[in-house]
Image (tube, rainbow, N blue to C red; front, side):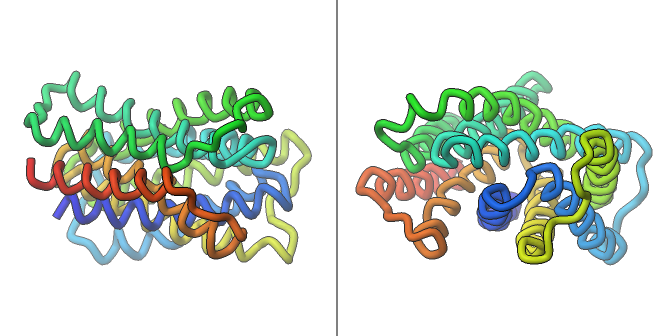
Length: 275
């Protein structure tokens, strides 16, 4: 079940990332993340209320810390996408978003079977292959630097938010999204940036916020029921989803190496499941 939730998280966060990419080209990334977090908190609350769960202070605190990290991380990564290339920024952030929770889990005493470890390696390599764009590096150095910083924040947010007690259910996601909104609203005020997206761009904030919140709930619940590191690797294949969606909505084309990468990500996920 945790693996399936990881796959759902990958698809939903891929949709959210696509919305963030589109929004960052038209408005300030801080405005987008502020709205995304607000919508996400509203979407996560009824899920937490419906689930059989408890309010656990420690997990709410970790969710709150996770909210600050993820809000800042997303704002930085979306800025990197707007300034350079999503083909560089998205996989960089995603790889760090997978490696940091995996390391966190292993340090905490988790063990990987040989098959699952092989699946993780294949999925991560395939992720980089899926979103690799030859010749783009020279024009995206600043974006790469921003993506690294944003990816570290993103990875830490996952480690704090998903390494929680199963009894807390979706409440860490509610805390994450709520505190993330407060952090970005304060940052928007300090920077003189609008808290709401322009009317023509708000749809990206709404759909991105809804998909991102539900994706994070799947990620958190999946980690609670299984291994944080394994679920994080599966969920972090979301740039493959972005690559596919880009062909539909941004007139991008899928190159042969990207097809190979998508197939490798699927193969790696299957190995993790078998492990």
